[in-house]
Image 1 (spheres, rainbow, N blue to C red):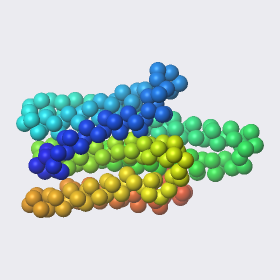
Image 2 (image 1 turned 60 degrees about the horizontal axis):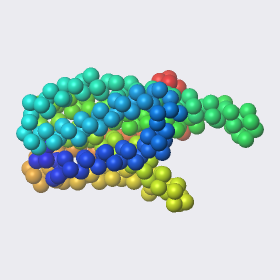
Image 3 (image 1 turned 45 degrees about the vertical axis):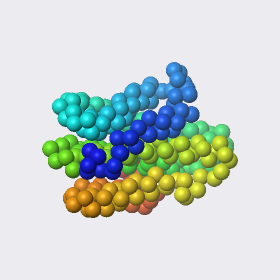
Length: 248
């Protein structure tokens, strides 16, 4: 995997461990074993397995243990559907909680939002989770479809792994700024987006310099860009709200 992606990629992926722990410590790990809805426990279990696979699989390729890599890869055929479904259930739960909380504020008199406004706001707040889940699903499918093409498989799997950065690093930045009493500005809000775009752009350049095909990295960058366009333009529209209400 190192030969077609960035050098030392297997070492960099180890950062997923502290990122995951620090990002979810305030909202999840610090509240164990109670105070957390069961759906979060189930999703966390499958996501941690996915993070483990994301770290182990490139290492096995580096050690030229392709047999074990393929065997573990087959496990993902059963694991990832659970990741997708539980992620959706978490998003759905969050959507319902948002509506319930805003409705409670109206009842108490601390908010004057109408039901229509409450539902629109809740739908807009789901954009990040829905888009990251869509990215992960798309890249994983592309990686599996191209599993016999090393460059394509590795690149799409790398793009899938980067979707972990959003839920983790975004939280680390948010918690850090809150602790320091600093505002959550535009740069902080879009740091992960910018980082992913730079990494994929750098990967395109790296693969081009190595004489490899830039198609998978370019496709990955294109998919991320489409997601970002949706993220910044659709969430406050009737189209987005109708879509969210349909799937929820």
